[in-house]
Amino acid sequence: MSKWPRTGSRTRSTWRALGSDPASPAPPDRWWRAAAAFGAAAVGLGVIGAAAGPRWRPVALKRTIKRQTEDTKIVADAAANPGGVSGESGEPGGSGESGGQSVSAESGGPGGSGKPGGTDGSAPQPRTYEVRRHLVRVQLGGVDTIVEVARPAAEGEFPALVFAHGAGTGNHTAFREQSEQLVRAGIVCLIPDKQLDEYTAMYRDYEAMARQYLELAVWARRQEWTDANQVGYWGESEGAWIVPMSVAIEDDPTFLVLVSAPVVTPRQQGLFSACAYLANTGVPAGAFHAVPRFIGSPMPGHRLNYADFSIEPYLYQINCPVLMTYGTADNSMPTIQGALTVMETLELIGNKQVTVRYYTANHGMRHGEDQQVHPDFLTDVATWVTGLPATARPADNTQVAGSEPHQPFWVTPTPPVNWFGRLSVQGWFGAISLAGVAFGPLLQLLRRLAGRPAEKLRPELRWPFAVLTGGSAATVVGFAAYLARVVHLARNYRHERITVVWGYRGIQALAATSVAGGALLAMRLRGLAASGQPLANSRLEWLRVAAGATGAAGLLAFASYWGILPVESRPAADDGPEPPSS
Image (cartoon, rainbow, N blue to C red; front, side, top):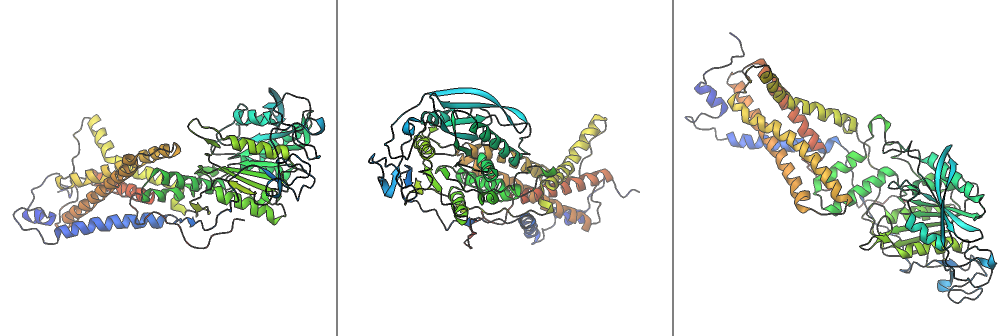
């Protein structure tokens, strides 16, 4: 007789072993054991999920940048530029505001040369230029690249800005609004096409891009409409990682404008912005555990080669004037830490020519319902550039000015993940677990297609098994859909409390129900074994139960690793010592 009988009468001892005999009193500890099994499984999965990955805790921001005035107007240091012009009095050698000299962005050329600004003792003559645009082709990195040149429609030599794109722009038509106002103030703007053949989400060569922007600056110096001694760089967002390299490798750099500069590495900036966006969206505590684990994991195949790129080594080679600007509504950048890092690093090499300005604007320096570029921002940039070298070193009490900046925590390196946390391992682990869960339904489908009757599980195992496997699969799929929705809300600064909070609670309830099904399935299998009954009616049924239960356990462990069954609360800010900025 086969030890895998298909049918058989249930004896009284069998029912008693299963705890389901209505004629016999239930053991007093039966439900206590069920609750204990459920609790142990839930806590065990939570502990495994917490211990399997890094425990990242943000460092509380104990330092802040000293904002000296709310007025962002550019005021030059009179002591560093004796004999300069005071824009306040219009008299040579005037001291101007705060012991410095205020420079007008709308100024004509000194001595009739056509250059904006001047320090020759004569009062600047206000002037606004018409804008002339044309396209040229320039060899950058050995590639014929289209560059838009926007320049004043006037004779003379003018300072020039080479624009370095952020991650969101790449065409020469970008920066139209910014270049329009800068050209009217007397600044040539050069906006190249970004070379996208080797620029992808997974691979970027920042050093090659820096050399391309340097080649464009060298080309600009040879043009008759530029002042060869006043060609600088504009680096916005991602571009602020690139152009400091251009300045560092250039023989005689003139000036650098950094707009919404991350300064920290791309991986650290990604962690900071993700946590800030999630907090703004109102995501529950457990979801935060997925952030450092995902961002801290190396991508398979050495993708994201630029994730740990650092500009700090290049900062030690910058000896030219630097203007840094941030929007105080920018939640994606460490607006305080970035400015402090640049100021303190450059001061170590004796460069005190750093000016910092904060505006009530977002990451793109836009504000208001119409999302126009902040007018004071462009005016101040134009004033600073056209006033050089007088504006290189800010006057006393004007180095840091503007709106009050805010940064929720100090950006620190993400802790490395272990082998189990690597995305490649997690991908295979999740896929194999899902295959185990899908084995039973796929087997039933194949039997039906072959015209054979479906293999049914034992009645006492049917519902616990379905709850375990179906609940675990629904948990993982639901969590993936939840994260996609949360990312969409965070990127658009939107709030949906029902989706964000109760969606997460619903996924946790699914996971808990699945764990309860697994606990009940384990108890009933134990009862069958204790009564001497076979655990399944056939080898195929036993394989189906084993594969499904193992796969479901894997999916629950997978979900626990990413924060569905956490035993920790939201990572609170660590009050430990704050790391130095440089």
